[in-house]
Amino acid sequence: MKNIKPLNQKQATKLLNQINQQFDCDIKDLKNKYYFLLTKKEKINIINKDISKLDTKSLNIMNIGIYFCKPEKDGIRLSIEGSQLIKNPKKNIITLNQEQFNKFMKGEDLEIKDTNGYKLIKYKEDLIGTGKIGNNTLYNYTPKERRAK
Image (cartoon, rainbow, N blue to C red; front, side, top):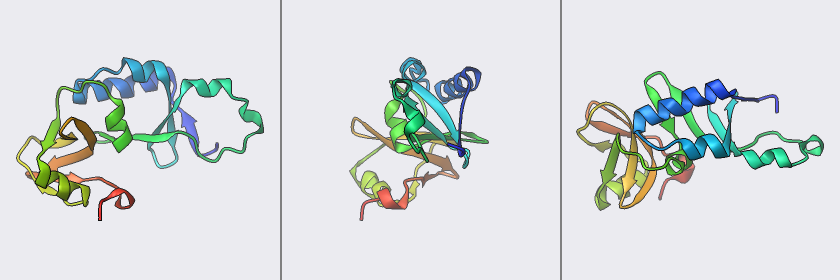
């Protein structure tokens, strides 16, 4: 696993505190259940702590975990799965209506007036990812392979 470096406890705590500050959410489960790994592309993957029960010496592991977030200069950009793993976020949430949701799922940027920064995107009761507001535009970070056709 040459391309992956585990975050130490101090680094993981700093990351989780940034997420909590940005979204005012409960990070206790994340801290207790997951290890955080830094990839070669400066992204953060997470794995369940139960991995320590496996005998990994005989495995040829090239990559491990799921993509959770990417720390940026101006905030934390959570992945789709990352947005779904944080509990009870209370701020920086944009709730989409049906028309906006359909456009967002196709990868379109949306005109939305809000403060600049990374926002959790919500449709009905589900968190569906993260976008970034800038100049009254919600920029879509949904990967092309995950967009609706």
